[in-house]
Image (cartoon, rainbow over all chains, first blue to last red; front, side, top):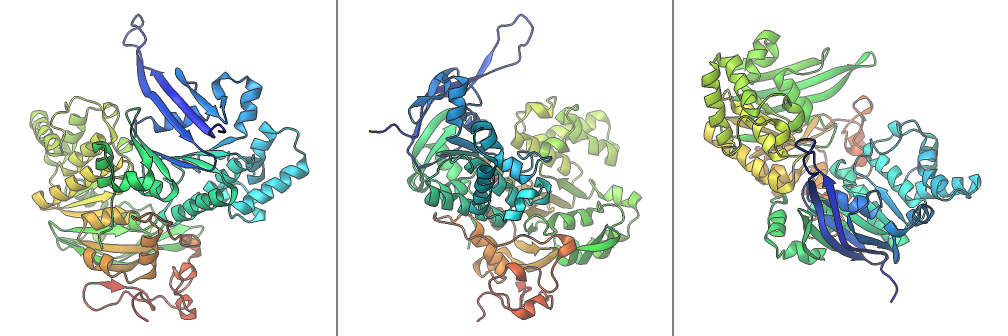
Length: 265
Length: 314
């Protein structure tokens, strides 16, 4: 059997705490207590939990932006933290990121073209200018932006359009996996629905797998097939999204599901 | 207790006045709750700022905001200062920016008592301790600083500050948007209970239809500075009449799973609002006439809707 797209084993991440005095032993706060997860190609996994549950740390570690104290992150069987710098660079083409804040994550001094083309410049330096132009145009179209967008600057776009730009940038290297950390939390409901549907379309059309981090169970129900519930750095429940949300077993999951505001009709 | 009549606001932008709020009217009694819902740019926060007299300088305001019969819009700033905090309590979205990071939470809750009621330090501290207990922070020392608390605890401190002077009206603008779901539910329950117990009117502003439907008795749905649908919460959600209300409801991730239905396009910018119904360019029921005139808020009884082709009608 082929290796899964993403496999995480025994992931432990500690953050140093401030020392009470200069001679005290360095204290650490354990944010992830041995996380295991696995995703197939084209899969969609939601990670839900409250602030401080460790879900963003998990996202950053899967993206190899942070090094864990213990455990492995394997992408198509390759251990990201055992790779050389060049090897990690090659592996990064296959996993890209979309973050929460569409205002803070795009450089205001760059045109949309250079923002979307940046991962090619960084990860595929041999691509020609013509190839870059073609791929940027194709990605803008894939996320529903007009071709003229490429000469504009981020401030000329609304929050939802900026999130489309961020998704185009993530798609440009043809990744197998996109890690999205609260990608729709800053958007209005009507725009949020547009972006969620775009993510579903991209998964269907391009077979992209999504690791979707969110505190919003309603959103997670819409875009993921599987879900894991994180609490204080530990997985308390996992399974098919529909099952976990309709028949939660862990009391914590039950409380989260009960707290979803529903419209009474 | 609070009566808002035909509230209209225009702000100076690029050398002309741009209307941001048009003809908002509603009434709120003690122990009652009214919710304003809408997306960014709908005018819901502008309504709250107009009631509190906190609009940006140069704003042109017409209509009336009556608090127990006296028009707040006619009050000089000096008198309005006595109303804010004393008679109208306010809770905003981000508790960390509403709190002073250098002052203990006890001192911050005591401050309005010392300002508005000239209480001594000891008296104010004792009252502050009672208020903190009432918002569920009895076990948290009043000598703590905001950074030592969680987001939900901070928002409770802000609520205790807003309650300090026993206001008649509590305005909560997205009070739970920055909080986790489970904490959100607790804070909303707390606000409802407090309004009920202490006889305040609660004006809740949110973008979340779910939050509104569970918390308030009357709801106003706003779009591009106007009220498009208004009525008792139960009747509005059981028989949504305006296409925007319906579209907003379908844009939420469905409770049963499946895809949400997106609303095409964007909320129009205040300086580029279309003539006629502002929702018409995004509306699937729109006819040619919708782009020509602004439909009035109309309907039999309390449930009213501003649409020429409301849902349910053929």
